[in-house]
Length: 253
Image (cartoon, rainbow, N blue to C red; front, top):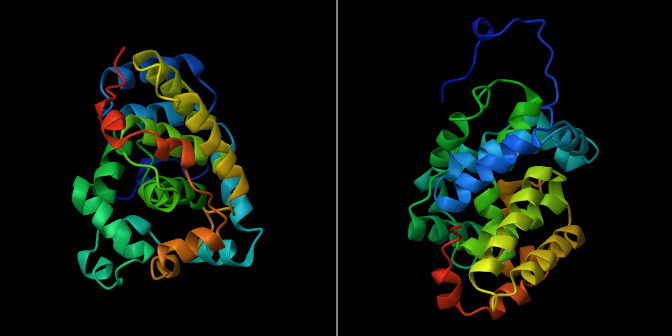
């Protein structure tokens, strides 16, 4: 990973919250609707609407002993999540094993997601604690898919970002979730997209706060045990939609 150095910015520059840019987010969302695989547009939306949420999230980590420990350690989770030797150690049924199967089935990598972020956020690798926290939220996205039970179809992505909005208060997640639900409902009115997204948001509100967890320890836990401990409710509305119907959603305008 190529980190920014002191030569890349003035040492007295202030790290200012990203100003809200709703029109930029809207244009990026239209591009995302046309191509669900254009992940860079997700980061464009997040950047346009993050406001003060990232800074607030980082300081919330400091309010708990475990969150503060994680902030102190500043582990780069992408390195762990892309390490096949590390992932191979987890027993069947654990969070780590299910995550391993999840990414292998889809060909996902944490570094691939990071590369998409770099297209729109040049400071994404900067050595700053608040920016480190933003990387952490990025890197645990697919782990949250596993924890919540939402797939990577259009409806599942809409739901997991609604869950993420409840956890992070980042308006970018809300914008994507509700916007995607609207598009899905237009494409297939029989799919209860709005109800699924609403339930995902409520599930995110009911769950323990996930950004500050020790993810290395979490990966060794049985998935169902972890869900119960973290108060992650079942995604019943999403799961009631037949898998074939979910897979058929194109999310195209």
